[in-house]
Length: 363
Image 1 (cartoon, one colour):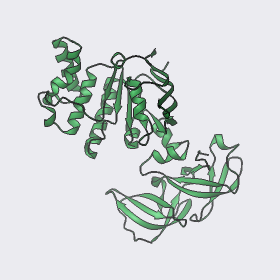
Image 2 (cartoon, helix red, strand yellow):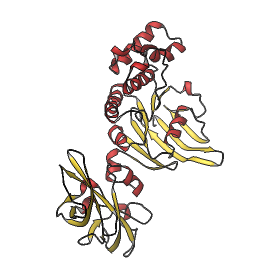
Image 3 (cartoon, helix red, strand yellow):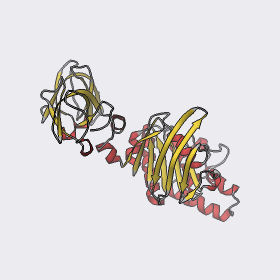
Image 4 (cartoon, helix red, strand yellow):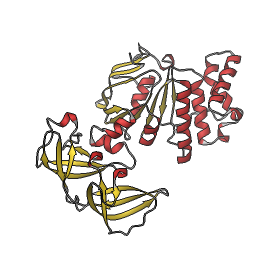
């Protein structure tokens, strides 16, 4: 049985439904990330796991126990929020120890647990400081330390890095990954940042409009997205999409044409699409990841018009326009200098192309 299981979860605020029949499971020790755009319901789901939001219908199971109606304090769950929620007049030591003191844990045990949390988070030298004397990353570590000393069965993180700058976000991602490895506790992490999701997760749950779009490992979601939403959300820069016409089909492959393609491209169908899907003459969506496009000739060629160039130091993002005025992004190694309006020949391998039908489902 899964360590954490959400079964048929629904959440309504009056006539407004924000979570629509969600089923999710996480194994013991697994790191699961909820990802999706703002308003998709990921934080609401997390708060229902914690008991901070009432479940309209469905059940929440933790470690084999139905906790749907159990109060938060009895769920053996620790939650780290986007805001640090530290007591400004207390030292780091007292902030970490606060929950233990409220539970009347003996002082010697409190001291031991605080010291252990400080060691894990590498902040032994910060215990006597006040929150105002800490950086944003250090404050978030204090909030995590406060969660650690409770020895929860389940850690919940609600966009804990969104208030940090880019460098601190990168550092804290590494620290959270290390914390998960060292503690071996099940963690559920909410973010809108797909880079955080890809680097931290054992499995990712992609949400949209209160529904699960796809669940899988980061590599599965990257390699085999089920629809254009997941394909466009997972990967940075996002996948390019252009409208193409299906000009040929056999049992296992289709041929698609586009005004900017030098020649039609033959693409293999997914196994589950070989007996269904679009017919010759239908409009389909061709998906190409920026890192799979190469300047110059390739097995297949697309002609673009250069528009904008963004230098990232070690690589360059090149924005081009198709003849149909669709924007395509190419990620090229090194530094490139191009002139606006310059003609670009871009090559790609059909094995790295994606195809979606008129409803946006992968074929």
